[in-house]
Length: 228
Image (tube, rainbow, N blue to C red):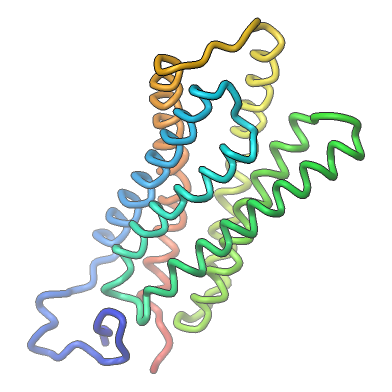
């Protein structure tokens, strides 16, 4: 049975030809929407970093959290026809992003106090974990109300997080080496455009990987919803 968008009513047989489930089609829409959201978010934060010359400030972090709304909104568009009361995806996911930002800022302060200054690798690993896990956990709490074996959503997110660890370490070490080699930081429109372009490419690659994994799992969960 297929539920009408944002209702508890099932689609009548006469209407079903207009909304036939296709796991592959859903996966492509999810991947496209999520990757686009990551591209936009990375491009905006990259542009801000190019304008200010800083990439680790609360301003940049906050901007990244706000731009996550783009990704969340695009995902909502994709799941809306298939998930009852799908509007809940937006506040739940954004709450996870906000919690992740608060945890990141708090753990950064704690690490720097404990280890005596900025610590590139520990902070990079902590950022990956504390910014991704709260959102995944809150989304799981939502999905478990509508889908069978929703714990699989946590595993899917843990999978891409683990895959990203070498990538995070690479960029952390690359950034640290660049900071040691370069002199005065150049800021302005030119660096902002350049940084936005580079960040958008990175966002596209990482967004595709993460969404390919979560999209396959979301398709399975939506196909195995609880009886209502």
